[in-house]
Each structure stands twice: as structure tokens, then as C-alpha cells.
Image (cartoon, rainbow, N blue to C red; front, side, top):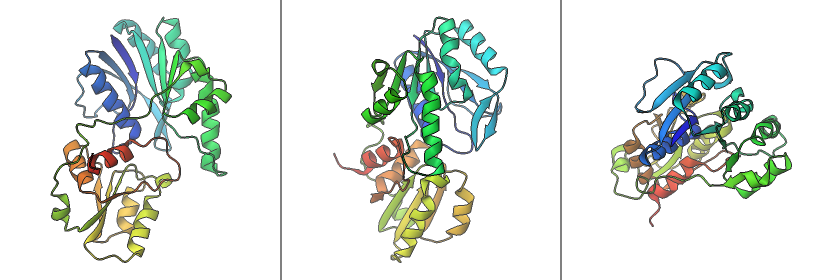
Length: 294
């Protein structure tokens, strides 16, 4: 089987969408599927993937590749035709191409599946209003997809009210590799001189509330042997590093070495996810499985 995967790749920062694309495409290849990977990014990006990759140019807005170039649709159609793709998958949100991919794939006789990652924010805030509007916009395209993967029954009910056929939606919660993320001895706490270690892993963006986590930790006035480690990168990375220059606060940046990530997670005594709204956080699942005895 040959799968066209419309997904995400790491640039200077990582996130759950990047991890999802990486894990799922690796899983497809391990099961002898061929992957044709479409992504937005720069031409000089490093890559370790072995499959065919097609880079789409785009206009970045709010640190996201939201607007694909006018030539992107033609490039997608040509590649799908040449590669004789059997099925397409789009990891939402990809870009404004989300709205046109169902019709494009159907013209070529290719079934298309979409996975919806973003949480539905009910808060009476600008962020919440934007989230609800985005769900309504996505529903236009999702109603035309052959199948839609979501992570909760509540999400299915919401999208159903917006017009997505219930019979097309499949609840498949996010998962992680339990062989990689499992408890084992780790020397990290000793290396950083921590008696107690609090861990955060994820994007360092405003909606994640990492600054509140670190400030709260420092306000507790704990002994120097109590530390918090912040794993990840994002638009607030440098600001937070400058603000919290304390020996009790460790910023690792984006960890591309999975072994180092697992080593730190295994050492954690407390994993904190301070964001007010989440879908089903992969980082939370990894942190839980890496340190929780089973």
C-alpha cells in the first residue's frame, strides 16, 4: 500500500503534530507501507526519513504554515498521480489546503482520511472563539472526507452537530510506544543535583502557561535540591529563559534525541501540564508511561 501523508516536520521547534506525523509514518513503514510525505518547510531542512518527500511552499502566519503557495495544489495533484497513491491522510491542521484536499483526492479516485488533533475550547475568550470558528471551518472539509479520526466521543458529538457524518468518524485516542517510554533506571537527577524533579515537556507558547508553572514553583521557595526541568521550544523560549535565570530551573530546549528525552522523563517525580485546554497530549502520555511503574 502507498500512503500520501500530509503532515508536519520539525524546524526550530517541535510539537505534538510533528511527533504524531513522525510516529505514524515510522509505524506505516515498519508495516511495509510506502509513504509519500507532503510538508511545509525550507529546502535546507535536515531529515532522517527514507521515504519520498514533497516540500510545499507556504506563507507563515503566527508561526504556522497556514497559506500554501498557489502552485501547491498543482504539485500535490501531479505527485499523487505519478506515485499511484492508494490512500491519502491529512493531519489537521495542515494549511488552507485542508479545504480543497477532499475534492482533489476524489477527482483522482483516492480515498482520504483526516485526523483532527486540536481541542475544542469552550472558554469565553478570543482563543476559545477562534477554536470554535476553526471547528466550524474544518467541518466543511471533514464532511467530504471518507473517514475522520478523532480522539474522544465528545469530539465526535461536536463535529456531528457541525455536519460531519457520524458514521465517518472513528474514535482512536493518541498512543505512544510503550516499549520506549517505560520505567528504567536513570542518572539524570543525580547529574543535575535534584532530590525532587518536576518535569514539563511540550511547546513553549503562551497558551501552554509554562511561565505560570515556573513562577509558581519558585514562589514555593523550595530547597535548592528541588528543581524543575522545561523540555521544549517555542515562541516564549528565550523570554522565559531570560526571566527565570535560577539554578532551580533547567531549560533543555528541543530534544531531538529520543533517548535523552526518555532519560529525563524517567527521572521525573512530578509531570505538570499547565495548559488550560488540551486534546489528548502525547507528551503527557509519554511522561506518565516513562516514570509510572506498571
